Length: 251
Ligand code: RET
Image (cartoon, rainbow, N blue to C red; front, side):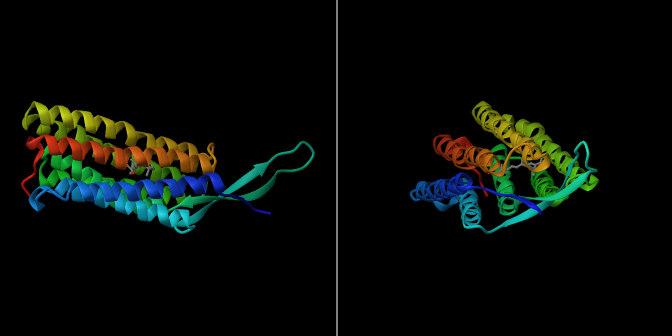
């Protein structure tokens, strides 16, 4: 008989909590833009769209949508019995990848606008980012033990290095050229982003990749990361932007 690895009430409650957090953050970000002229609302709008997409994805997952299974063959060896195999299916929350493929480009756009990097560099960072997320999606559905599962993971990690290069190298240089205040703020919020984002592929490897974390623990880990990467990041960005006119963008 196959075994199904699924979330329990703990995981499901966590999904609902994050849905509410994302919804409240969206309302707050929209509210903060109220008295800001349209020409200065770009960060507010981009950041609000990020939490709106996240709340939609969490609503889907909390109500049981956007979930598939990936297949594992488990082998059991006993002393007197020849190898027996049985099938394991683990939940894959693919709604996350829909969310991430829309929201990580928007998060990068926020950082690119702050740094003031060129259109070409923005394009490269965003396309590499989409390859990273879709590579992670293919890897998540790959059957365990197949070379292409970790192959896609490797491709996604290389794409992630391209993103880091664009932001940490080109982004930081451009932000510094806007003056010390913008440069220091970019280094701080960019460093925060780098640390949080780098934990995602680590959690992925432990949870989806090698199943050393159960589905509930995976949901909780991503919940903490998502709250730091979206509402906390967004609050920090918008408040700093409102008190630092040098961060204004003219598009
Ligand atoms: C995957 C697995 C494949 C390798 C890499 C990954 C990176 C994911 C990242 C996700 C960031 C998500 C954010 C969500 C916002 O709430 C797809 C896990 C490199 C960096 C910031």
